[in-house]
Image (cartoon, rainbow over all chains, first blue to last red; front, top):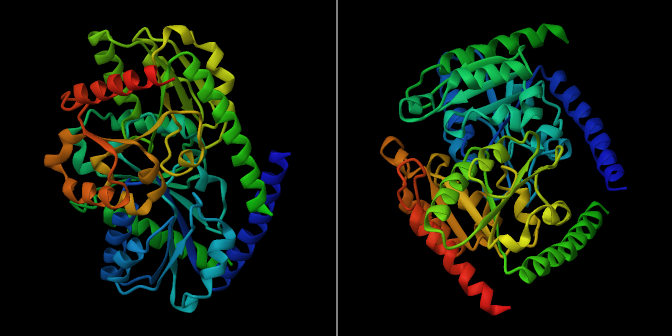
Length: 222
Length: 222
């Protein structure tokens, strides 16, 4: 019975996610659903990404910030002069399609090429909920240990792209990045991957180039 | 309607948690529910804790490992020669009282003084589910950033004790531990706190002494 309720919730969510996807497509917007543990560096990655996007000047970004409480992340993002909306989930451990759908019209959709949605810090539940994104972005930091792909397989399987953060800390860790990548390969080989450090800037340009390229592929397709 | 279903689930969980708590009390067992993000160092903390507990020889430990998939953590724990049971939640993002209750009898309860339960790596959902523990233990690593108390307030409020891990990395981070602790204080002042590094051993003895002391206070109380 509990399973049935949950399955109904997911069906309803999928319908709303499709509505969001259609609305975003009608504005030529690429939407990325950014998922990772608390403290893996999602907001810092966003800050660095927005900085590079604005310097390159090829695409315009918008941001939805998801958090259980506070609007701290949205305040960090606002400094970059991009449209940003904060969703407070009030205890819920993930964003869902209804939450995202209810704020889309708060954004100037005709002035956005890429919508970056930062999900609640959680490697588990956000993977279950399509929000209408074109790709899930997995963010994992090198401080989290190599065993995460086997332990949280769903998000490692579903993410079209993975960003491995905090690589500047590698010299100070007992962390085997080759082991991590081998385990990621065993779950999903067709995944774009970036190793980057928001602190040193290593890998950040390549990541933004990937976003620009996927956005370009998307636009003529509709 | 969704809220009602959820509230029924939580009521049922609370009843089962009380059953677990009574059963544990009848065996003089202190149960700790260890909660933290993926990669915050829960299993490594457990390894170090079991090592020190066995060297001090004052209490006997048992372990329940919670994971979405794999039995890797239980295999890491088995090496320490303590009774250990692995729960695979098959996708669920937290342990609940029913899962824990269903494995208690797999453990030699008369030979255990402290039951260490490692929850699924998740800073959100496990906070909602009482499993019959005597205290929730929050594990947070210094690599996760200082803003976690405001962003995940429930677990910071409910945890009787907090363990701040990976302190050996502090020299390599832009991390203000005083800011973290001030924010933790603003949510809950009456919380035992330990700063430790499983790598260097800093703070680990004090943490185990706390466990021994709480166990001693518990036993005569029943």
